[in-house]
Image (cartoon, rainbow over all chains, first blue to last red; front, side):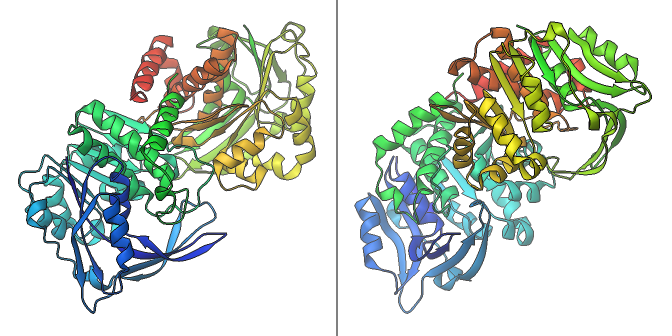
Length: 300
Length: 300
């Protein structure tokens, strides 16, 4: 089943304690799309400027990602993000953000996208995320990501969005901010009561927690000793998960749990190289092999 | 198989964001013993002062814990610890420590303890931990805990101890300090190369990681929404784990993994009440029930 993703497409400059790399292909929709493309056809909606290297579009197409929804603004500049990771490689600081054309992002889905059954709204203005939902009225599963900025400044719009979603993905600090609860289990349940059928709290190197109508569970991150660049880990987690759900065309509790494990595994590859570099080295068979190891690791 | 534990027996005063409780039965050997007593007979070695309430000893005995190694120093005072938990209930600050009789702790094992096959050295001076090991030459499995203080001030003694241990349990910050590595997977492997056959890194609310000769794995904490007092979580984790190993009289890789899961489950009960209160409310059947839920949670 094809999967639509709407979100940022960016150029990243990343500094880690040992290296700095500029002009990496980044953005939430990009990391998501590449991760999901191991499982299903992806339809990308985003915006870039005229500085956007055509080779990036060709790479996405070569992975089966439909880029007809990637709008190029003539005389515009692509969103750029520059960040630095702290020595623990889990926390980071943003050194510079140039929203550029992404600041005016008003996603219009191509006709062929509007019959999509699986939709992921990467982090963005809640009102814009809502507008995207209205363009896919026949969807079966809509999942969104959000961030502290919208929780603090657009709570009304965010609350409305939560009522329309099947799933919400957010990180631990955001879940605490949204609910006022310092206990993540209580926070996850509280977010779930705000509307979404399920909520996933991402904990970075510590994995993720799932809260559904009838169950709560936790999954650790896959332990890799090779953490090169965590940028996009959360989006590739979501991409692996949604990609698997769309591939299976199912989202019953068992499929959701397997999908979450696939998300964890795909994200563990994403962090093993700068930007999307490592993702280009691996195939579905590597993912399935690591998935087997992950399954074995957690069985006792 | 009986299990010997050597460590602190204390009176704790605990402050959380919502409550304060004084005169709780605490200490590493106490939390360990009570946790392990769900599985096997425990032989406790510790020291207290003449202020020690006899009812605490009676409670330990009622759980099948042999207290003939609990030395009472006349005119001495029992070790007391006072601490405050931050709102996240994972980090804490020590407000006051009175080592009292524990400052001169020189553990001498009763004759009946010396044939023990399973030994746990709770956090303590490495030289003293080493002295305990010399008293149980016929042991099958010796596991120790340690802390930042000894890593910083008694590294030589600690290195010697590492060469004698079967297993080491330490927390994430300590593993980073001991190895200089910020990546926990790399840190765990590096500690394992310092001597112990296996290393377990405790990550508090995020669970624990295992590093053996041939395998690495991670286990999340059991997600409980009811975190009342995390004091002793690490020691009850170790107690549940060692108790199960002693009960099974085995420590092959499969048994070790199951033991670690039991440790996680027992610790999740420990944090649901102040001090040891919650531990007195549950039985082996509650532990096994939660263990089943934990197993199901992690299977996909």
